[in-house]
Image (cartoon, rainbow, N blue to C red; front, side, top):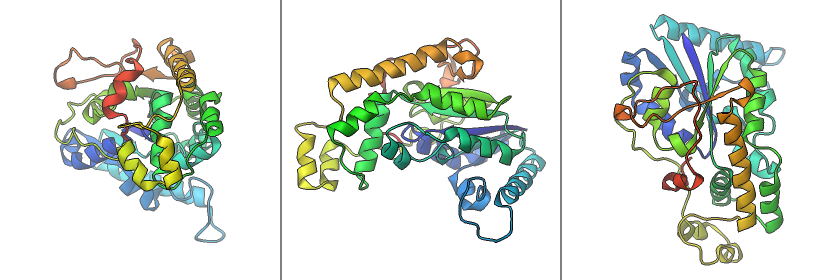
Amino acid sequence: MKVFLHAGAHRCATTTFQEYMRQNRGVTAVQGVGYWGPQVTRSGLFQGVLPGPQILPKTDPAKRAKGRIKLKLASERASGFSQLVISDANILGSMRQNLHLGTLYADVGERMSRFASAFAGELTDVVVNIRALDHYWASTLTYGVARGFPFPNQAGLERYAQSQRSWRDVITDVATALPGVNIWVQPFEIFGGRPNAQLASMTHIRAPRAHARIRLNRSPRVEELSTYLLDEDAAKLGDQFGIWRPFNEEQTALLREAYADDMMWLTGGADGLAQIAEDNQDQAEEYLTFRKTLTRGRPNDQNQRLAGSG
């Protein structure tokens, strides 16, 4: 049984993909594809994979987690599934940590090493979603500020823009933690808002089109965002309308340059660590497959159709 760990990434339409999979799990099951979403992974299945409070003293929580995962995988295999998609963006880390540290998933290598151990060699593929950094940070900040994260000042915005850590570093950390596992990268600019295309590219099945137009966790627009803020912070939004763009031109240019470098690295072979999914627009019904022939993502401004998706 092929086991896909869809780690996704926050603010990359991962929640939309998960809802699509949940709604279509009966249809995909007929084609031999099982699914675990957050409803499964966060119900205690992964408890103990990462360090945390121990419920039962004098027990090895990591060992117990490994046992639970092994039993559940065996159950899926016995049910006749030939492929299993597991999706949970929190596997990579948290949005709040990214915001606090001003960088992307700083401890993802350690986290993925622990998941590799928990799955005991059962993982065959890992899927990571990436997004143009100016849009990623804008969406993350919008989501965070609307939920009480401090409104960023210019020094804070500069810290995000000047961060030396990009998607290349995240992907490298993931690949290093999972030797022998296929690492696939799905750019938001290609796959955002197309959960059926994401599924088809992973599993090679004819992904159902039902529920493919679901959109969850969109960022609030400026006019809505202002209602969540103190008056002094709302005033800092200025005369912006629609999608909040917190970065100035220089900061935006830095972030776009970093993402362009990431894409060049990926399309150049990613040092053999990962492969990027190609968007085969010529195929009927948006049926996509992973190919070893790599392609550059679309220009950054084309992701505005889903600029706030989470």
